[in-house]
Image: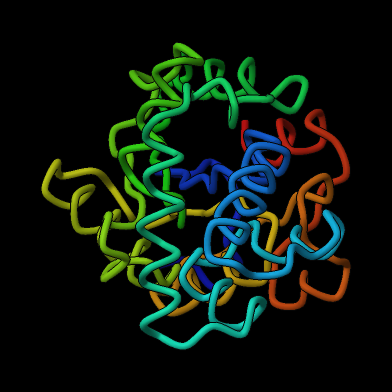
Length: 223
């Protein structure tokens, strides 16, 4: 799908959302705390709850909160209920410069797509709130029941929808902030540019074709 040494001009760009375009950790951590309280579970420190941000939320309940599959599913219902009842502004703290970059890429005619482990409904609400939903040809997230939540599955669905629109995927790249983005995209031959301002650690950048430390550097890599 991609060139041997992929580089711009890109035929299409996939973006992660949490930790890449928006700093959604405060909203997610707040809902997680209330969900765990409702489940009668101890609430870890905020620094520990950051581990939930990025991977599928169901995985977080199982792996970080040590819940059984049934408990994790119950917690997911509580969490999704809170997310549905709150405004998208809770998850819409944008990294400075990212909205301008998205609009510049769109204006340059490069097809854009979102591939996020956040629920697709919530991702759409956030992007509409930020007035950039129309910059993306595809907005793909996890399904409400989390049957599509692994990053590889989300990327696969995003690529399927892009192909349906006959969008050129011969030189595609993804922009993300966690190892899940790299692993999920790699499953489909998509290279990843890692942003340093998100929730991942430097060790998670293994396998990325590049790491950028500022939005200006990302702009140079994409435009």
